[in-house]
Amino acid sequence: MDETQLRDLIHRIIQEEMDPNRIPIGVSNHHIHLTEEDYHILFPHQEMEIFKPLKQPKEFASKQVADIVGPNGRIEHVRILGPCRKHSQVEIARSEAIQIGVDAPIRLSGHLDGAPSVKLVTPDGEVTVQGVIIAKRHIHMSNDDAKRFGVKLGDTVSVEIDSENRKTIYNDVICRPREDFILEMHIDTDEANAANVGRNTVGHLIKPQH
Image (cartoon, rainbow, N blue to C red; front, top):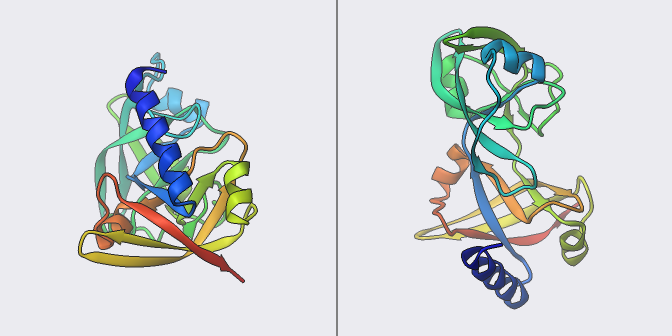
């Protein structure tokens, strides 16, 4: 851990102690998860290269990108996230689903039953992926965070986002605790733009919904 990371960690700990309901907001841009098989069709003879680490342990944005092609258009240069998964999956915003002509459901990651298909295209290959979703907003948290908030896996909470000139309350936020998760609420670009979310915007957990 370098000096900057240590400083950020100390700052985060102090803020959490002063405000125990504080939750960092992470804006999730469109992205693609691939199986090993689909990855090697799209990127033959290429190892997946790290572009930048993501906040959650062992996850990263790769240097590899592909185009998402739907019935009415395409989204170009969409980044592949690593490492590879057991099922390929495409996550886009509602506005993008309309743009390319797919009726993508709002789902948690991995819940792909009935989700539509799109083509993924690179200069070296093409695959059809059944699994286009709009990610349901959720909070990654450690087990200790879950105890502090009084929630468990799958609980639904509300989060208030107090950004500059625009206060927004998001309901139906799913809690996803895991021992190694780092505290962060994920929303997509449509939701972030609607709430005027900036780089350092945070949310506050209001209450579990029953």
